[in-house]
Length: 123
Image (cartoon, rainbow, N blue to C red; front, top):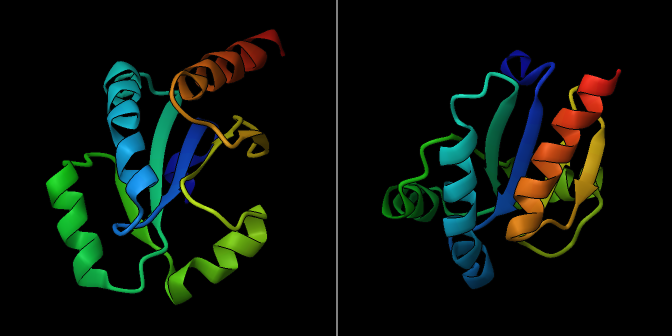
């Protein structure tokens, strides 16, 4: 997606039925609020739900304001590409489009954003 090009991107792989995913959402919301006006940071959540209605209902319930996608085939291709099996799986992508850090939770999400921004300033 061109709108993410050149930005630090937090990608959250999740599902409506995943309790730990739903528990992590308050952290993501907090960091989204902190960085949403920074043009160098973007958030993307990718659901691996197989039930589109459950996914849409969860997005409304959780008030997820950032970009949301529903992965086809229950996320099988995404899981293979990003090499994960369990969710939540949160990764930080640097401004060059490379995986910067993965398996992020809580404060580690914010730290990854700050570190990735600082890395790009040094170049």
